[in-house]
Structure formats: C-alpha cells, structure tokens
Length: 318
Image 1 (tube, rainbow, N blue to C red):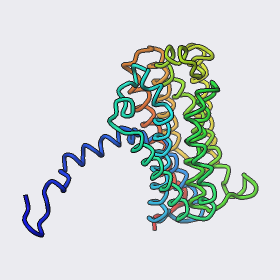
Image 2 (tube, rainbow, N blue to C red; image 1 turned 30 degrees about the horizontal axis):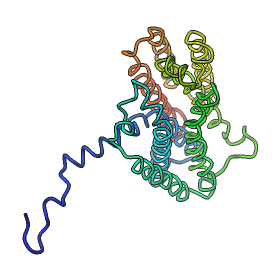
Image 3 (cartoon, rainbow, N blue to C red; image 1 turned 180 degrees about the vertical axis):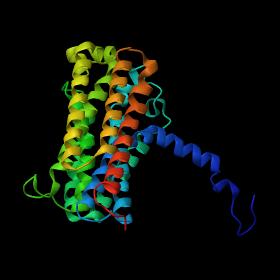
C-alpha cells in the first residue's frame, strides 16, 4: 500500500519484529550477563575519579559504558563462534542460536567485528593509552574461548578477561598508572582485578559442573574434569574466600568504612549460599547460583563503593 511518493508499509519494520530481532541478538550474546563485570568497572571509575578530587564526567561514563558493552559483546560472540560445533553436540546447548540457525555465522562475525570496532573507537575517544591497549584487550578477551581445548586452567583466562574491566576503567579516568604501584592509589585497580579473577574462577568452576560428563567425553579441559567435581568445588570455595580477602584489603586501602563492611558481609553470605547450592549438583539451581547470586554480588559491590565515595570519603558531588 502507498501511492506515488508514499512509503511502502512493507518496508517499515514492525515494532514487534524489531523487538524480536533485538531479543534474539541480546539472547545470543547473553546481554544480561554484562552485569557481572560492569559494576566492578564502574566502581574503579568512581574511586579513580575520587582520588583526583572530582566526579567522572558524563562523556567519560558513556565511553566506559560503550567500551564495556562492546568488549563483552565481542568476547561472547567469539565464544559462540568458536564453540558452535561443541554446542551442537551438547544436549544442554544444542538449541543455541548458531547450532539452530537462528543466527547465521556471517551475522555472528559481523557482530564480532562491529563490537570490536566499538571497543577500539571508545578507547580512542577516552585517551591514547586506552587506544594503544585496546588490541591487547581484544586478544585477551577472545583467547579465553580457545583455552578449554588445551588447559584445565581455562577459568583463570576467563577471570583475566573480566579483570581487564576495572583496570580499563581506571586508565580511562587517570590516563596512566603511577610508576610505583603503591603511589597515587594505583594498587587499588590491581587488587580489584585480582579479586575479579578469583571470583570468576570460583563461579566458572561451578558453572562447568553441568558439562562434566560432556567435557570428559569430548576432550575439553576444565578443573572439574582434571580434579573431579568434589576437589574442583573445594578449589572454587578457596578461590571465593581469596576474593573476599582481596576485597577487604581493597576497602581498607580505599579508606572505606561501615557501608563497605556491610556490603562485604552480604557478598560473603551470597558466596556461601552459592556453594551450598552448588553441592546439590542439580541443573535446577544453576541459574540462581550462576546468574542471580553473582549479579547480586557485583551490584552490592558497586552500591557500597559509591556510597562510601559519596558519604564517607570527604567527597562532594559537583
């Protein structure tokens, strides 16, 4: 329909169709899981700005957000591409978008390229150091997806990939690290990055429990396969306790007080609940243990960090 000079209604995407497409791509990259690393990046951003006596500007915040979303989308897209044949064979993942054809391989590579370009562009607009380091970040976040083929320590590579988030946000605000890590607070993002690594190691081991039999049969590596579920869970628990210790040191050096202590206790309780659920070894709890509890942990950390910066560090909003 539509006369001369009019608009053909069939060329205008229906809102429901557009929403369906967005939902498909959002589900493909598990966009909701961005909540894992993003709060740690934003916390590092706020603390870095506090130590410079100011509040991160809207432009800096928007570019950090763009860089984070782009990096996470790039990493997840590459993971889906690299694992598509294993996903096709695994009953748990056989209905994912690439194995079922809901997303084409060409479309996935296009999304990977666009998100990689988004990360590099955002980094370049932040500062020169972020621009120079952005290709390194791309290699690290994508390399993780290949590690399960040759090392049981694949969880540490995932942790390293997400640990770049607080370091990147710190560099986005500061533009550099001090030559000596204890000078000018530069040890803080390093502590936060180490905490993120151990956090990821712990809950990625828990997540790997559900693929234990499949991974063993197909020669894929993880600490669950190498050490067995019982010993791997012990390692995951130790990893999460190390995370809590690192967060405690971070709060101490950042001069945080009561709000942060309360948040740290809530994080510890969430981790204990996660491990209690993990020992039930049922797929019914995996969504709660993997997504909800870990999303809660990262959000709690961001909230109490911002609260401390605003109310207990002599910092004034401008």
